[in-house]
Length: 117
Image (cartoon, rainbow, N blue to C red):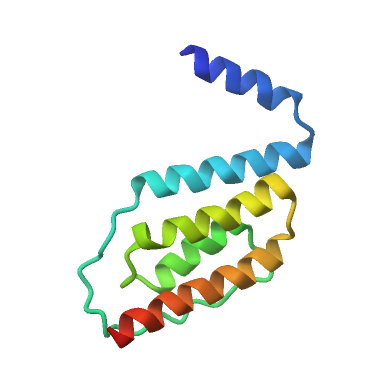
C-alpha cells in the first residue's frame, strides 16, 4: 500500500463513527465523480425520469439518484454546485435533508436552463 493509503487509514482510525461515515460518503462522491462521463447523448428535450426520493437517503445517494433522474444534464457542469453541497454536509455538518432539498433545486434549475436553450 502506498504511503497515502496508509495515512488515510491511520486518519480514518482516529475518527468517531459519524465522522467515518461522512468520510466514506465523501470518498464515494469523489469516486462517482471520477467515473462519470459528461453528456449521455440524450436529446436536451428528454424529460426527467420519475425516480422517487427515498425516505432515508444520504447526500451521495441523492446525487446518484438526481443524476439518473436527469440523465440529459452534463455532470461536469453540475460538479461545482454538487461538490459545494457535499462539503457543507461532510465538513460543516449541515443536515443531509437540507442539502438534498437544495440539490434537487440545483438539478431542476440546470434542467430548465437546458430546456430553454
